[in-house]
Image (cartoon, rainbow, N blue to C red; front, top):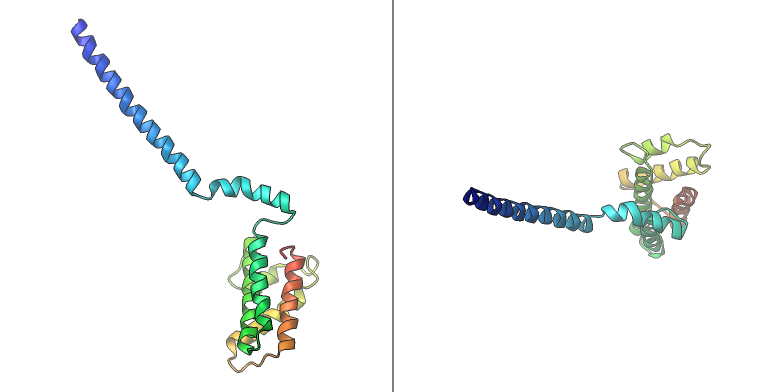
Length: 164
């Protein structure tokens, strides 16, 4: 009877080693993927960043994009001024999408906002119409003053959304 117990204990030892190795590899895989993904950043670091900066997470990136497009207004080219307005419109569209507003275009997202929440809503709609004129009318002329006023409208709207 001792002969039968000895092989069983070896079998159990091998089984323990195999399953222990598999468990170790699984745990190591879980730790690796948690560290490689942005999961921890989404859960913990975003909240800490919001608390310490008193601003919503991700505003640094938006401010950097905003400064870049405002620098386009300093260039003498009308094409750069038009591009600044298009980029400002796209930035506002991204911000509203991140805030949860649904719609394929910025116009649809702006219609969801009420004038009670944002005082600049009508002016933002006008700025969006200027952007549409730039995109769909190749002969549209844009002066530097008009470009500056339009970008200023977008800036005030983004400030009112507490992004800038």
